[in-house]
Length: 243
View 1 (cartoon, rainbow, N blue to C red):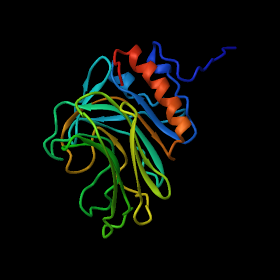
View 2 (view 1 turned 30 degrees about the horizontal axis):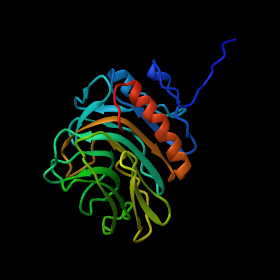
View 3 (view 1 turned 120 degrees about the vertical axis):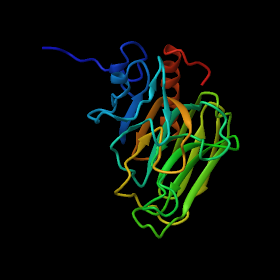
View 4 (view 1 turned 90 degrees about the vertical axis):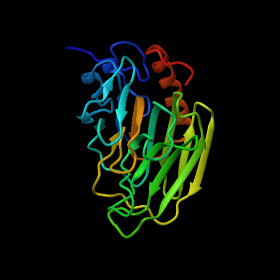
C-alpha cells in the first residue's frame, strides 16, 4: 500500500505537489510558470484546473498575462466573503485603467450585471481592492474600494478581500494595509466566474503573475502570516526574492 505524506508549505521541486497551509475555505491556489501544464494545476484539494484563454507567456517562475486577451479562467464564481491572493507586478507603469492589469477578479464595468470583486493595479501608483455590491442586479452599482500606495512594477504579495462588513487590502511586501466599511449589502453574482490576469471590461494591461489564491472567506491575521511566510520560501526557491 502506498503512503502519501503531505507537508504543507513545502517549497521544492516538483511544484505540482505543493500543498497550501491554509485550506479552510480554499477554492483555488495556483503557481504560475515553468510549463503551461504546471501553471494550470489547482493546488486546492479537489479543485478543478484552470483553463486558458489566448496565449499567456509562460516564463520560468511566472506567467505574463494581458487582460481581456491572454489570461486564465478559474471557473469559480465570486462569493460574498472572500480572500484573493496575488504575487504580481505590472510590465510597465500604467497610465490609466485601460493599460492596467487586473490580477484576480471579475470586474465587469458600469452596471453590467455586477462590478464584481477584484484585485488590480492602478495608474496612480496604487494597488486596489474593489468589492461591488450589485450581485446580478444591473441597477446597483455601489462599489467599495480600498487602496495602498505601491510600486506596481516590482513584485508584491497582495491579499484583498471582504467579510460581511469590511473591504480589505494588504500589501505584505510593504507591510501596509487599508480597510473600508462596505456600503450596501454585498450580493455574490451568478455570472462572470473569476479570472486570473483579466476582468470582463476596462482593464487591458499587461502584468506578471507568479502565485494566486482564492478563499471563500477573509483570512485571519495569523493565517495570512502563515501563508506569507510559506509563499516567500516558495518564491525564493523559484528565483523571486524580496517579496
